Length: 612
Image (cartoon, rainbow, N blue to C red):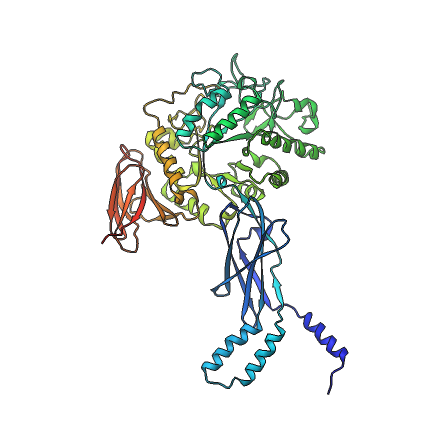
């Protein structure tokens, strides 16, 4: 019986309306169901894996779609079948900003027919009808395409986001003789910083310091005549977050510092601390931005039982929050106009998540070259939330991870956990706020081993100097992590030419990092068994560049052991880039010995032997 045209039309409509047969799920990388972007730097690959399958036995085709945000057309990459319905493909990110990616797939009847035809031919079956079916399929060439239900994003940062060596110094101590330094004195210090191989020079707040409730030396509640106060008590009659402390110099001096630093291959990073001294102009011009107590005074900062009377926090729950948000964003924009593209943000976890997502998003939309380091020593979920919201790098718990077990567990997480897609660690063995007991009591060996660990475990690391290379280790009081005579409250005398300085070690470490691509990223980190808990061994690899590091965690005594590390049983050589020497190794277990009185660590470059 002949079908009517209306029936034919209905049949076509039903065919078009058929639900999709292909399932696309469990893509990686994907952060919180696509709520947040993953992170890469310019030139890196984004490897995408996804589960793709259909009902029945039809042949499935899968494609990765990607484009730079704003482009109309998608680029396509065929996905390769990995087995167990898992597929993969990758794309390269070549410019700063944001990329988008998603996946599409379909069941392909023609490819299914070709596959099954070969099976029938191999079995000697009659394929006459099958050839006719194939001809019809080629004419139709129709497919029902399924798209993953989200478009995912990648934030692409500059290479320094992945690999950087930070050196923190107080500009006011740059002279080193106990008198107030200036930006000109910092310029004079640039060759010293550059010689050690650091490429980021981080300056604590450079703004006018309040006098009301100013803290004295050793965080004394009352300042004495001549006490310079804490740089984090920002704001005085000379101005606030967009002003410079008069004794440091002028904006022109600062601009010159930024330019001279770049000639040395160094970027200037500024501290952004969103808080005010009682003398900050904001307090009078915008009282609605602060929390007022029933007695008519402004609520100062507290972390009970600690009190910080010299600092007023902003009240982010004010009804004037839009104006406050705009003003704080303009602080970044002001310093960006003066050549600063790296910011270390003080205590971001005490400000609203919504502010950071908006502020960083707006700034990076116009200036994708910006780098933000989150100084948030707080609970893991908060640290990770800040990283998801846009912070480029994050401080870590490295300072408090000292045993072999602690280090292995923590850095395995940092390098292997899915959180690595958005959380970039920046590890510091000390800061002006943190002098760990390991440095207080471990002697020079502790300073040497901790900085080797920092520089080789993480592609991003930093030190607070010259306190670190001069091994400042006296705490304010027993059990405290605060420095005695902390530079936060006074100008320090620094003799950087001291014969016992770690300056030479730092220079070697940073040169090794610069010359070996394996140490310029984190994801290849692998720990190796060694039969001594006082020795830790780990490797990193980038292409043919393979670095094996072994550190003695005992800062006083000789430790030895057998490390499980080999190249498929073949003979090879290891060259000690830190201590010198070249050794022939054989098999999967090799002997090492480290005497902290002479050498605290091996940083081996592994050479495959080509001779027989």
